[in-house]
Amino acid sequence: MESKLQRPQSVRLNRRGDRNNQRPFAKDDESGLFSSMRLPQDNPIKIVWKQGFIRLVLVAGILWMLLILIVLLFHVWSCQSSISFLSDNMFPSYAAMCNKEGKVFIAMDLLGLAPKPEHLNEIGCPIPVADDPDKIVIPKGRTPDAIIKNLTYIEEEDLVNNGSQSFAVFGGNQSWLQREENFNLKPSMKVHCGFLKNGGADMNPVDIEYVKRCRFLVASGIFDGYDVPHQPSNISIRSKKLFCFLMVVDEVSLKFIKENVTVRKDKDKGMWVGLWRLIPLKHQPYDEPRRNGKVPKILTHRLFPQAQYSIWIDGKMELIVDPLLILERYLWRDKHTYAIAQHKHHRSIYEEADANKRRKRYARPLIDLHMKIYYSEGMEPWSLKKNTISDVPEGAVIIREHTALNNLFNCLWFNEVNLFTPRDQLSFGYVVYRLKGLFKFFMFRNCEYYSLFILHPHTREHSSKVEWVKSLSEFKGSGSSMKESRGGFGLWTPYPKNLDSVTLPQVVRTSKAG
Image (cartoon, helix red, strand yellow):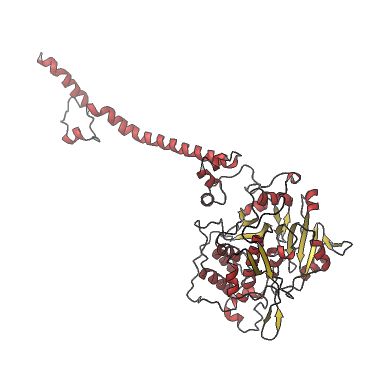
């Protein structure tokens, strides 16, 4: 009876070990969860632990990744769908992700995670405009002026002396105090904005009369003869009747155009190249053609005061989209009044300044002085902490309604170009910064305008002596031929603060092409 009770135990021991070579279990093996020996009571648990735990983790990870992918796909669909409540009311976090001007979207875009629309052009960028200009509804009236109620301009003659003679200047010799006061917005303001008496940039009387009828306009400019007009295409009959196409030129460019393309004259002696009405400017206000080109570009509202809407395009660009579709997309659709393209490579003005120096776009020491003034006045390099997509615009395209605040912004932007360097991309973000978020604008993706325009190369590269200057000593003497006599006064007028201790922020190139 006793042998029968012990026999099952003997069998179990023989199954666990070698019948002919049995050894006792170690104490640790009996109690350890990770024992290399299999205890009878632990056998099912250890099988799951050793063979199934890693598999369980992998399955859970895959399921979690699939869940994230489904959420992202749903987000992409909701951003591009017409179901606005998904991103506005029920899920405010989606609104931040879908908002292309928001910090979340900017961060996603920098990481390459931003959602892309279905319809792309040949370079993978959204095709943003509507299809039919005849269906566009033009807003009635003007956008109300909520901040600036009354804007007027200083136009009295301002004389400067170059050491041998006095002469009038176009932009005025603005003092540092006047400049500072102009950044403090008030309902009624009077500011420098070019076109001072006897300062130059004069239009022919026949052209002055013509532009009085221009409420909608596409404006461009060619200076120093480095482009010829490129004809707009795909322009509807409606837009041909509605828009003025105005090409501003200097005397050198007018002569060059007449020699290379057909210029016809109408009964009022107005000059035309296809759709473009040529608007010659006499008595150029600056020595530097680059700076002269900023007059029609930035001060469009001053040159054509009757205009309500304008689209500026650089002279090297060919418009291939109806301008009504451009206004609808960039202004009216989302109730913007000012739109400009983001720079292709740079977001910080200090990076853009570094690129200008490397490419010899202006005198290196003057660019450095310009940037030191901005840095001493609190202009930080662009970062995600800022409320703008970028501090650097492309500038080749500017789409705007001529509201009082927009006009003031353009005046202040031009005043910086007049005071410092003609590289207007260095000044745009600074003026935005000084207006403390009160100036609202839409900065769209740089690649979008490849859907709107064809870029042509210049007929020749512009160059001037000042672009090759390497040190301030080359500007010595009040009568130095290297100094621009009618612009850049802020670079030669003693700055009220000491700049000796100012060290510009280190620039890290984010693009080899920039």
